[in-house]
Amino acid sequence: PFGLMPDSKDGVIVYEDKETGFAILNKPGGMPSHSTMSNHAEDVSSMFGAALKQRAGDDSKGHFLSFPIRIEPEMNGLMLASTKKEFCSYMTRQLNQTSAPNKENDPANAENPANNCANKKSPNLAGVTKTYRCLVCIKNPDDIDRVEQLVGQTIEHYVNVQLPAPKKFLSHKTKPNQDLCLLRIVGMGGNSNNLRAACVSSQFNDSSDATLAHRLWGPTALHPAESIGVKFVMQLDVELLTSRPHQLRGQLAAMGLPLVGDKIYGGGSCEMRAHRHMWHRMAVQVCHMSFALPRWEENEDGKHMLVPSGEKKVVSNLNKAWWTSYLDDYERFTIGKK
Image (cartoon, rainbow, N blue to C red):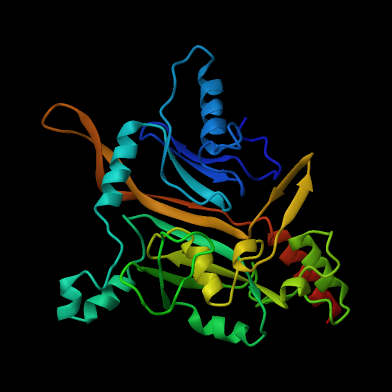
């Protein structure tokens, strides 16, 4: 059941370790992790749970299923599912042992400012590394050079997570209840090094630009990019060094780089219709995930539990996002005309 999704590559099991008790899924965009008031069946928990039950047989008992590391419903890509309580407990312990860097509350930082830089360079949370592939809107062509200079740097904002969306991400802390947000741009460009950014403005009467814009935002609007003031789109690979609600979306928007399809943060609406379905999608994908593979160990009470092994890692990658073929076609068309 989990494989029958509108996008042919979505909804598959990327990797599964039955002995350890986890699976890595390729979650479709727009699908929540759990059921909601308006959607009681089309969620990852219900559909993957049904797939596990079907595989084991109708007479089997209920399966344990939990998601220790979740992604927002609008995002697609790699998602970690726990199929054993022991693995869920292990990941929970790992996450609880790691707190997000907080410069203001750490006395060591006040005594030694160098600790701030050390905290900002932390590449992951609880030994888990995730990379988000994003297609962002460029309104000012000069921003292309500006973004290139930001690759490898840690970018800092502050947000009050209690406020409703769209949340305001500020470059400086103005109130005590604002939390620190850190991200790092680790790469940019398309699948080849020839494409820095793709034009989506039809002001030059170029068919490839207009075609790309309509494929991204949908065919209904006459000028979908111009309607939101966007001239180019650019692909970025981003790592989050802290974990806050709407952090990726809000920080990119605060930098003037809203995600394509992120309507509430200025990236327009990507409404897609196919297979008798209608859904909104956002140009962000969890394209890389890695974490240390735990091992089983017997404790003093004779119970088996998972502990860090320090020997092996689980590494998963997705090479293509839903917009990858659009950029490839654009690049082939524009290079062919030169």
